[in-house]
Length: 73
Image (cartoon, rainbow, N blue to C red; front, side):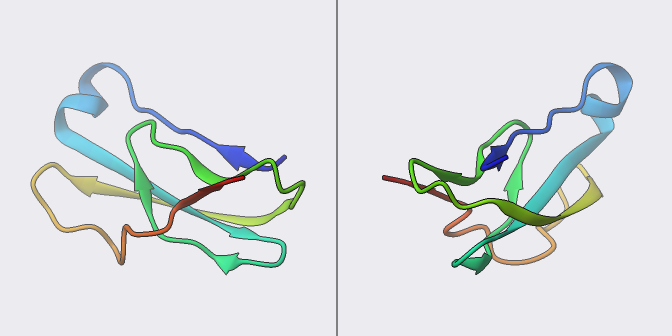
């Protein structure tokens, strides 16, 4: 598993954003992705080693930096 995408549906999607980030082999912790964005790598063959997920009320800040959440070769 190199990358993930997570998306809420129904009532939850109307009230919350879902943020998630991954720990990638060689890169370490990447930035936070949200609502169906890709998190991880593509084309590197680096495995995911951990995943963090947080639900945040719509309009609230991200739990951390959202830059560099996905690397594609």
